[in-house]
Image 1 (tube, rainbow, N blue to C red):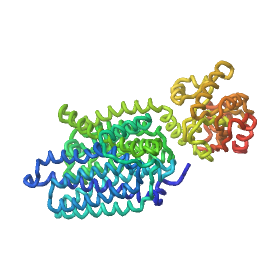
Image 2 (cartoon, one colour):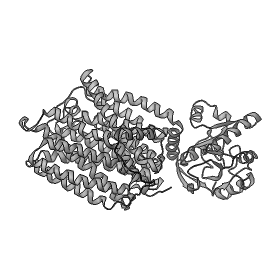
Image 3 (cartoon, rainbow, N blue to C red):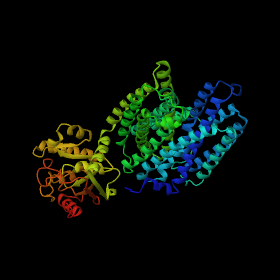
Image 4 (cartoon, helix red, strand yellow):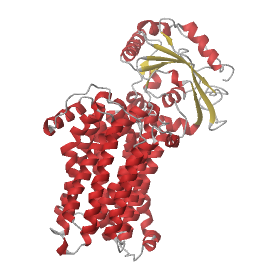
Amino acid sequence: MTTKPQSSLLTKRRFLPYFLTQALGAFNDNVYKNILLILIAYASIDSLPLSANLLINIAAGLFILPFFLFSASAGILADQYDKAAIMRIVKFAEVIIMGLAAVAFYFQSYTLLLFLLFLMGTQSAFFGPAKYALLPQHLKTEELVSGNALVETGTFLAILLGTLLAGFIADSPNAHVIAAISVVAFAILGYLTSLAIPSAPPTVKRTQFKWQPIKQTRSTMAIARQDKTIFQCILGISWFWFLGACYLTQFPNYAKISLGGNAASVSFLLMLFSIGIAIGSMCCDKLSQHRIDPGIVPIGSLGITLFGAGLYFMTPDHIVTTSSLSAFISAPSLWPVFVSLLLLGIAGGIFIVPLYALMQQRAEENVRAQIIAANNIWNAVFMVASAISAIVFLSVLKLSIPEFFLILATVNALVVIYIYFQAPDFFWRFVVWIVTHTMYRVKKQNFANIPAQGGVLIVSNHVSYMDALLLAGACPRPIRFLMDRQIYNLPVINTFCKACKAIPVEASDRSSVRTAFSQVSTYLDNGDIVCVFPEGKLTFDGEIAPFMRGIDLIIKRSDVTVIPVALQGLWGSYFSREGGTALLKWPKRFWSKVTINAGESMSSKEANSQLLYEYVSRLRGEHR
């Protein structure tokens, strides 16, 4: 498992040009789109072909329409051609489109600018599948979370900076000229960075491409539904964009009506939200230790509910109109709103990054781009649904914007519950990681010896009541533990054990032992990891007791990989039997060093209780 900081990817040619290209693309999209919307909003009636409000709504539709029309075709092309080459072609197309946009800006041709906005949406629709499908080809599995965290950070900061620059340009005296120069310059810069992206050739045989949007869309959507986990990731990502669209769309009116701010205050709210997502994305990578951990998703979703509801409860009842941005920021009554919005963004970043990484990692390489395309289509559907929801709740039902935010938080609470029941063991494993790493300074050694897939039997010494939790938090895959039935049946602990699919056993009951061993075999044969403490009880003196013969019976029943593991540094802890009964004595230390050392793997055919005892003893050494 890599321990290099996530920022180290920014020094790699296999990532940096890609990162700059996608960030510049998001930046220029928002510069162009927001300049256009602002110019339309403030243009004279005579210069517009239709009313400003109608044109703004048409603009939103024109940008999102290509995702319905072209995403499926884009996914097929990205699976059959070099993804880096596709990105370069798309970025070159952006240069041409922005060249035409420069002419349209100069002559203030809003009809042409709207058509070019449609082409920009088309360019984005073709860019997306290649963009996300390329990452797993250039990054190692353990780098996927870091890569996605950096991508989401770069994307949202680019959106923020692009929106802010658009406002600055639109407010300048020579807005049309500056806009024309800017969009072309950033498009050229994006194309130049794309030239340095390393090749990402396809893994499937190329077939003759025919543009059949309806048939291809149906096929692409069907491919995405074949894997339940992938489809759930897509729905989760789409839900994130639904919420994001709902919040971002309401910021202008929320700032004006509910918070008493001016136009500049809208940018401040956007900045808080975007910076929050950037922080959350980077925190997600740190919290998950650079590994794909779905258990962090419900944590992020819970944060979205809490801090989304916070926007409702923290919005002041009495609005104090502020005439400047400094007055808006310095108003004490608004600080709870600012904190809630920042934390909402952080929760969103924690929520979204593992979903992107898991979707990329699980997708078959030959259809990965098509799955990304299906994700883009679903994103577009949910974003349209967000607009409809806002119309229903705000215009039809006449709710206030804070009340609308509370509705979103309430609905998201149902999403939290759904996510939990889909993968409770992942959630609890992440909670366990937080708890154990708060109580101990945990050092892992040689965990690369644990296979990424397939049945694995972990055999460990047993020092304290925290052993299972430490192993569960350290292992990159969920572990099923064989455990004493009396502990399994304790209130509260029983809920946790069931969620983590622990296997209860009563050593004095032969029927219970047979049933437990049968469950162990089933888990191993299904490709899960099972952990057994062959001593059968906690050590009384800190030394490793002889391994019971039951481990031999387990090994003989399944042809799996066996990994000996030694726990060091737990003897003398509050949860061990050193100095008295565990849990019934005064703690002597806090945040002590604990080492979990994984040995080399062996096959079940060569393993036995005596050999494993000797191996675990050597791994532990004199450090109890």
